[in-house]
Length: 122
Image (cartoon, rainbow, N blue to C red; front, side, top):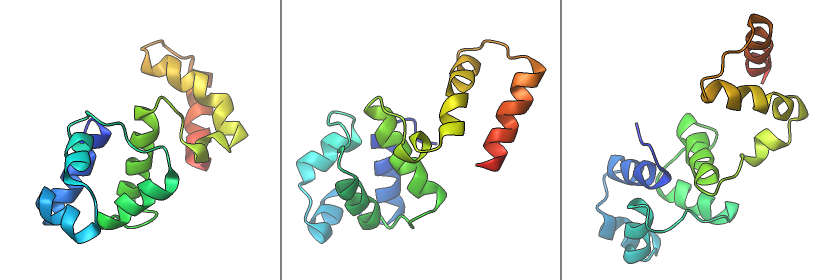
């Protein structure tokens, strides 16, 4: 599993059967920039349109798990929370519980059940 946006981008490109140069030639991208992006030397674009262009060029099906991971990793690299999460007030209200859990803080059984139920409904 990819750890960074660049690693995910590279994995998806390789899975699509393209070398870096061929991928860039086919889609009109600059090989130097894509190489930097894959190696983490260039941050993912903030533009949703550019991210969609990359995702489509990589053959990522809209709405698939890879699609959401692609956009989530781009947001995380920018220190942002994905916009679709921010639009859900209930989920935003539970984010502090998620963050505490990720930091290893123990939640009460009630808090954990509430968090699980919120995630299931989403």
